[in-house]
Image 1 (cartoon, rainbow, N blue to C red):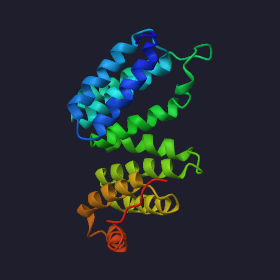
Image 2: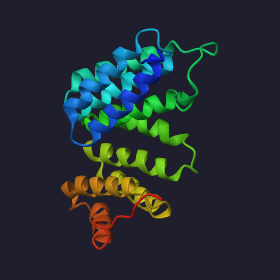
Image 3: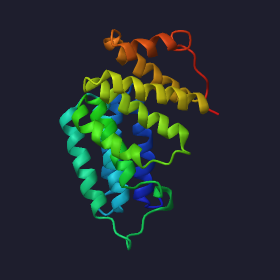
Image 4: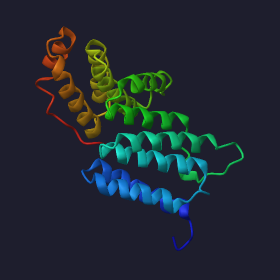
Length: 214
């Protein structure tokens, strides 16, 4: 703030808001994500505003506030559409692109239990995702597995879940292990479906095991 780099201040505050939202401090996450967006201001680069609005959307999602979350997603898309080849963005926003926005959008819809919106988005993202990014591929596939279960497609959910487990075995990660636990817990509702039952049985000895990120 002293250097008047409001875009960077918004990025730092928004990152902390994201952490709050994911660690049980949902109300603080909402307040800080909104403050980060406000501090960055309307003149922040389109990529920055899109990212900060995505963080607002995620914060509302974690707080169980569906309408504000979806509204922020729409505003994030509008902000990103203003980006152009001639628009300069800070180097640390190199990773913010249309694909990343779709990923966040699909995660929000999955968490809000709106699978009819989440599943097509996730399939589009995953169809063109770099297979060498094993950890990210496992994480994003994990949301597809949950969304498919919510869409009452347990057989396909089990198939995607198995892929997540196999990817996680190739790249040990605590976060992937946690997502596997989430998937297996969600699939318990379909334990009488043969494909699901086989998957759950195969994971009984290892479902509680985790390994740290390296």
